[in-house]
Length: 186
Image (cartoon, one colour):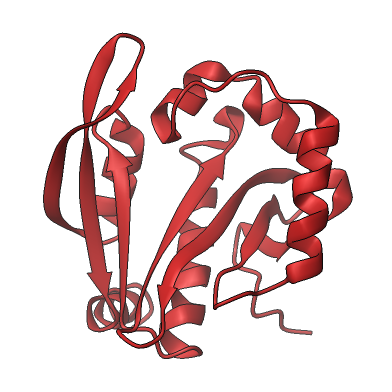
């Protein structure tokens, strides 16, 4: 049976209570957190579980949703969450988090493409914009590879490990996505 939320490498699914342990493990990789956000104090499993219970109960709200990314053999590799969804202008953003041991294996790329296909082809959004810290070279390379265009820089917007970092903005339109997917699947 075909599953819209499954690709060649990953399957996207809703958050479950058991996923709190995965996020606790991610939060303990403090070098990784510096690339996607900032270094935060340790958090408890109970705090993560409480946050998840709210997310599970709300489901999709204002077009925003969080998926877990898992390999086809059922191993959780990360998460992708849409945010800043504006149906009036047809724009949205997302944040992505993949455990270090699963990076650069195509999981993030495929998860992003599934989410983009859903927002562009099912929900009628017309543009996605993302912000990447300038020190997150892997994410910048990933988004360039996916066809995202650099749209601007906010200078010195984050501070981590004693250094200020710029925030780089990338965008992709529905037409650019459609052209990219036609090239991949003629």
